[in-house]
Length: 140
Image (cartoon, rainbow, N blue to C red):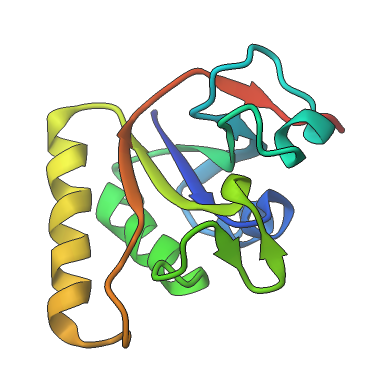
């Protein structure tokens, strides 16, 4: 079993989209990347914690690959807007990939280069590729 943490805007909507993928065993909404332990939704929304709204995806990499998860990630949100997804604005809505090892980091960076080179978007991808940090589950 492998794990991937992604930030693609409001986590509730993102959670549902990844739950439907074959090979994904669980998707949990939460926070990562900040400097406050066990943050609450209210704290994260102030923009003072440094956390991003994320989903933690547990998946069977013999059924679905890291690359396929990235393809879905880039399809479901706009990776060219900084700290915004649709009407949701704030640093907690930034586009982010939290990698676990150098291979994942390289794959994520290569995917961003491919998207930028494709001309698919009018602007460059601003998705942050960051080392995995502590994941805090969101409140129910």
